[in-house]
Image (cartoon, rainbow, N blue to C red; front, top):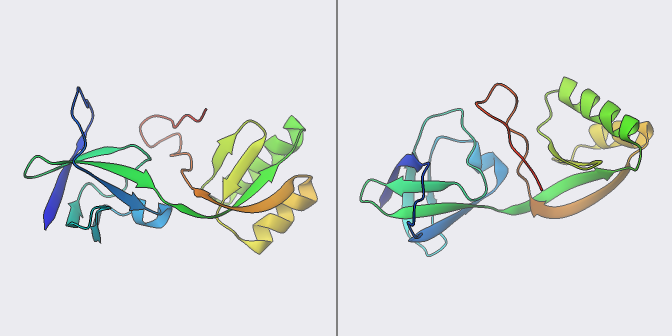
Length: 148
């Protein structure tokens, strides 16, 4: 079994040996067992509290490079053309500590009928999609997360 023991911060010409596709709930865990996309058993032993991000590069104790892929999963996407409505929705969801992926007047969160109704009543259009979910890491998690 491969054993992941560190994050790679400077890729510097390294090429990946494998990829590991995980949903958001699995990417929140610091220690777990899984199977890489090529079928290798892998154990991840990293600091707890950090979320593995799309494209994050990890290194095994034997020197192999593993790249994290965010697995598509069901998310609720809410959109609007009104920046005040958008800001209010972000405020109310953030006040409930809901993990959010945020773009230009759109946001994604894990499906929840109560939250979906609230956002809809505030004026956003709701849709369900299967997408990679990569929410913001938070202001106090050591930097911010930027989306294009």
